[in-house]
Length: 403
Ligand code: LMR
Image (cartoon, protein in one colour):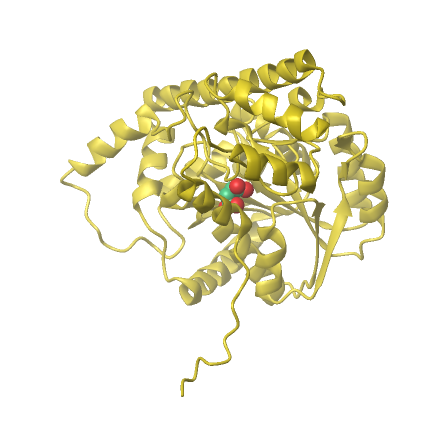
């Protein structure tokens, strides 16, 4: 007999299961449009040249050792990350009422934020968009939140943001609810509110006394301009909100497996800083003691060295513009093929993903008959497209839609 006899088989994690299925698929051609990871026009992962160069210089730097980092991470990294998101001229930074804590990428930032909100602030209600990154629900549920809700976000018929639905649902949220907002490049829809729409969202969050928590996984990667991609967050901060920002450096530095993240805390007054900092320190101590140094050293060195920072800016511009080109190309090809429906949403969306509007049946056809892997919601990773496979993908979409 075994004590493990009653352990049930858990469900697969769709996005990783699809990537495995793609690897196992012996057919050609095949295309992986599932997991959100950048690919070059040759379909290969990309180590940013500035990252490679910095890795080499760190590896040969005799002054660097492998002692523990502080529990809340590498200071030069957290300062640079916090400044990247809030802006160098941020009033909150000048007034010393914002600080950062290094985390295990964006997921870790979300988990630390959720733990703090649940244990310290006794929050138990969270709202995330419908649809959202599936892990939002899991992170808050695993933390102990029992009141998990979604707000309307995507209008599947019009293939655009459902602002009215969003505002109506948030209007019903009880005071103190945590509201997860995607800072830019909404995952999975690729559809962001306009600046005017953000103002309406902020008005409502203020009036209803809700707590904004920004998930920022694509700063700079979305538009090519880190300031533009942080617009919504900075707007909220300028309006005086207290809030959290969960930053990931997976996509904008291509450091997926190195788990580089930062949790930025913005307060009304710096007087609460030490108390919050000490509680987050204890929380991290109980979760994983202290964060890994490797990726944080790379990001810190790049952001803190003007010449390297410029090289990074060039890299994010080249990634975001390649994605934009793929958006136009895919839309144009579908229009040329006469594929039924309007495909303009593909170019109106931004960032890594497009919510194509394809239904589950059409997705199944793409996977089974064309070996094109995508989430069953119809989300595709735009970076998986390139000039070599886009014709194939467009024709397959056409066939799936008209079948
Ligand atoms: C995605 O949404 O595909 C990525 O953010 C990877 C992940 O962790 O789900």
